[in-house]
Length: 360
Image 1 (tube, one colour):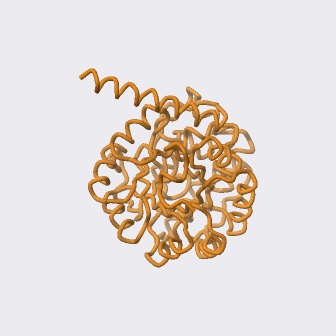
Image 2: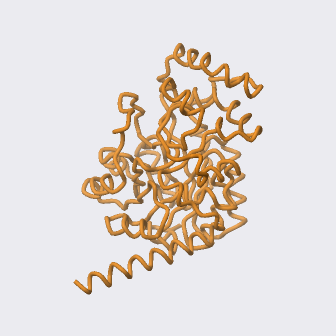
């Protein structure tokens, strides 16, 4: 097992774990094969489903890879507000000729069972989203040689991760697509001013902790990777950039929407899951986002049938189209070639910086 972040791959490029089908074995293997660090997303999967994907990935590559877990979430949802939201979504269910989902699904995402599998049959890297594991959990991974990463959105969260024994933190700026990895879901923090941009957050975290940092949020080009590396990150994590690749498991409508002029911008919303997540603004988000309660994962289960029915009907206006702020820069390249292109852009940016420095 690698013992340092920079030993994991040739290039400082991490493919983000995108839960919901975006990042599976094919994508992770292609990224690993090109010298990046590929990730499997275990979120929303059963423990056995995760294990089967790990076996498949191991059959496709012998390079180090990572697996991302969702932390169990406290049950804070008020059942009455969830029922009110159910009533508001009744028209969606009728339109797509489906039923709304059962909100009584598990809130722990099979966490303990997944931990047991990953300790019994270790993988090179395990990362965590929506919170920080206990020192006991992180120590147990250290004992089997697994490198651990905790997603953070503030300097205080980064300090908590360092104190708990994480090997590194993934610093997620507000520009990032998909769910914000905040350790505590605070609805009072919702709004246009919520969250820090990546470069500001990266600077704060670098001064707060001594462990390596992975930078994530809106990164789509090699020059942007060069910028976060110059700002102190050891590696850069990209999600939306890999979403459009052929190896991505994202729905074709989702891939097309990334560069479709119809979708002009992204916003953070609770409309689809009950937790803040950045996606392309569509009809569903506009109509239901202002009223969606802070009730993850109940809202995720509630809307799941509608989202699936919208996808089946070919209607991107009823789907969750997770995307970062840089989505218009998405390129439909094979994942391996995208890594190669990003590395070439990174090298060119570094050379330009060096030349500029020498000229000065």
